[in-house]
Image (cartoon, rainbow, N blue to C red):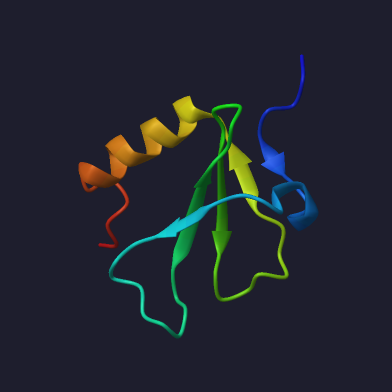
Length: 76
């Protein structure tokens, strides 16, 4: 089985179109996402673009969004 999650080098995502939340300021401080042509989702911290993006399957991304919308990741 091929590895579908994990780290990719920045070169592997050279043409990715990155999106960030509207709450992000121009000085950074946001998680960015790119939807890849194979259905996976790449994530990166725009405060440290030297780190390789992390890639998850579309299913993992949808589970995360569901949990986030339900408040499961809110700090206590």
